[in-house]
Image (tube, rainbow, N blue to C red):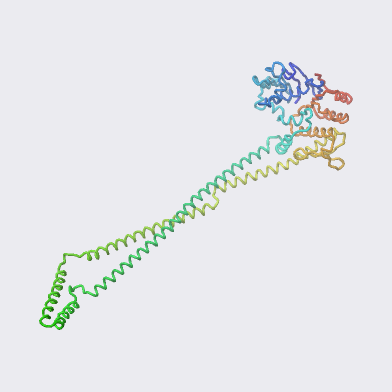
Length: 514
């Protein structure tokens, strides 16, 4: 990409300010407060837009700082650039009321869409973070932030694995982690449902078990009542047989009673004196006759039944009915007990089946293992390619450092989170041990090396007072490296040192004074 020109129609202090640029090194020279940083910000805003903050933060945000001093409603500008052999124009209006962004190909008049990513495609996929951490160096902002480390880590797999940056390992791993969380959730839900069902079956089994024991106790009680009834019936039968043995069933008067009567009459004759004994004998005889007559009369009365005989006939029937009822209850209890026992065994089988992992659980576990395996493989691949990128980045940064420090440092190591150290004569030197100027050169080398790796399209390098801590020799080396390796460079400066050194080195440049 090559920036051809700018039109600051209404931006900060500028109104209808036109600037034209060339290939190679462009020097934008001006005194302090002349607007160099405004132009730098304008280029960034034209490429990536300028958003407005909210609340108190909006007072000090970029939008408010560079809002036009006059006619803020015409907060706009144009940037022309060349990419892929064609010339394009970006026309933006930053005003919140009339905000718009247009991208036009000047060669054929085709209108492209910034919202759909056409500009990002022309910029080789570079985003705002990549811009700030590689090719654009602001005042006192030589050191890139941690977003560059994240971009390098992502690129480690994407570009090295696919060759074109289509693969995004961080996003892939994130999607796999989300998928794993979804599977874990399904497994937990299935486990909870199985546990809930198990608790329900266990509760039902416990209830059935108590019912079985209740029926067993009830069965024992019924059997005891039946045994008691049988004992009572046997005792009553034995008593009846005893009475029948004492008194024959066909005799109304027992022979022993007749013998007693005769003995009483004979005793009356001999025990009393005459004539009194005759009178006593007559009375005893009449009493015996009346007793015999009554006994004979009761025996003949077959139609009358005494209450005792009625009870003797009724009680056995009730006892038989009671025993039959107890038998029915016993049969019902045993049958119900068998049904409950079968139900309890079925519930125990269900519990045993629940202990066995089901087909659905096996499928979920296999899915989870597959996703975890994919995550592990992606991490292994990312780590392997990260080492490759680290080697590539170290080699490229070392070449740049070696040239811009005049061979003072020939090796550099960039580790995780952009932790860096130098190697000189076999000794490891931390960044904290070198001067501020050397540290800025190291950060500059890192930015340029990262830009060469991350960006498909070579972009202009924009440096805003970035050489304040460089000595003349190292600045000459840095300018020489830029002239040799970069197609277009913008150097914003308030000093003439860069121009003087370029003249001494015989390097041509395009000067813009503001």
